Image 1 (cartoon, rainbow, N blue to C red):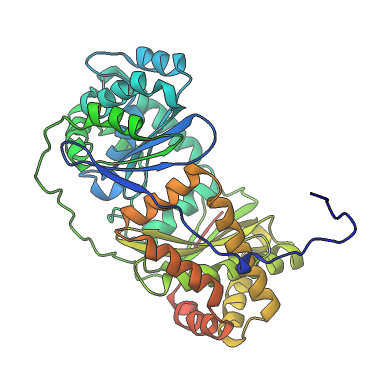
Image 2 (cartoon, helix red, strand yellow):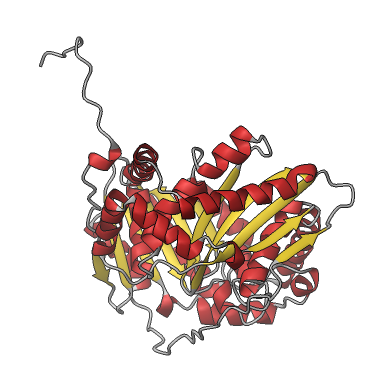
Length: 427
């Protein structure tokens, strides 16, 4: 084949491509547990995620979800924390436990050939963790020390307070760490939360990489023989208790020269029809480096190194938040400019070139997400954990491609009203 080096190849916008999410296999283990798996990639590596309903939403008391996730690898009745880490290192595996507002996830990365040796260790951790008292005391000391250091930072305090303002300080999505709550943690409390929420009867397992029926059999042999608990997990819907005050100015450091600004409002989650078009509008507003907020407040005014807005969906709610750090002397001017950009989106239709750039940015990022097995798996995780089908992915792509500037202006008029937003400014 002769390569034509005289003519420049055609350049195509990301909006012109077709986006196909590879199918995922669903397998039920012997005991009925769901395993979702994807055979993709060229390297003999695998990622497995065990996802539990063990996020902050399910906490019976504050700080327990993070403590359980942090201490999950610190000992079982058969192995010490040192033995567990030594075994993982011997096989060159990475094991992480992360918790969020809704879920806790145990994630294993490994060479595929080592799964028979590693899966029994993971089974031990999620079925037989013992949370030694000595490890808990060390965790509490470290957590309190980290908290005390972080509380000196205005951006940390602002992140805490904006969620508390939007959802209510006693709401699961509005809680934030406090020294006395960490000190109150007990081994019995951790074990209770662990046994209830890390119950393997409630797990969803996701696997991707160079895998097939053999790897599915490995998982079934370890996790498929457990008798399942048929009791339902109580999931009480808790309404946000938004505070009546809209503006909060917090003096965290009398000598501070920087202010952290958070401007936010509640916003529906992925199940609402406005969510997907808001992803486009938010990108235009403050969702990437070329956004309106960045062009005005960073490039034109020079108030900050970076300013972003984000739409954050949870299973039982969500938020839309603008965040930045600016000089203390320009914090009021920066807040004013944020609202100015909202007003422009409500009063003017975005230009065709600007909207095309935003769509290409969004869809170009999606192309990257469809390039590797692990990122594809994360797409499927989001779909499955939210109760969607593959059609949800296709519908969102269609919206990203076809939403009009007029529709975005109408959306802005619904959600960018100044009186609906809350402000937290921390110096």
